[in-house]
Length: 261
Image (cartoon, rainbow, N blue to C red; front, side, top):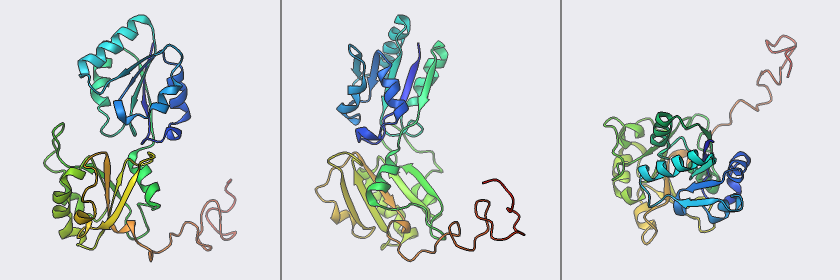
């Protein structure tokens, strides 16, 4: 018996990985994170599977379900939205399973920030403009922030910011970021990235508050940085005609000449 933690991706059913699909299909028990998991994804469960919505459950309840499956010798598919490496609450479940000596696997999923960037049709890192992406959030009821992990600290780097679980704190986000990025800095908010009802709003730090009046206050991702709207960035050297590299040596004297491609 094994518990398979599966990143279900941002929402679109066809963004579930092939491994994730196969893990679900092979598990007689499926525990899924409520409305964050599209119903179509549960169609991969085998006939007769026990399918449990964990949204109203406590951690103790979830572990009890897993223990019951363990005693019965049934594999469990544990579905979380996005990718399991960030804000999935997987860590506390793994700690319990290790203590109980219950085996598990982890299957990564497409993260929400990647789906949001695709929806915006942008690359988040552009040469000489932004070469770092910060994944962060603002304080919430379920989890506070370590003292050093503030938006102002991250903003000082000028990196592209992807701010999760924070659209309800937009006013504070704008206040913290404007001194570093400037009021004309591009900002975008993507609601329910990759879902059929996905919404996108593009603006600047100065105009975003008015732009989202009446919009939902949850299930959204905020992206901030010059890379969101830049058009005059320099091209990287990677594909430059004269760039000497292992896969395209420029002369017989190149240090890469004679290397296998």
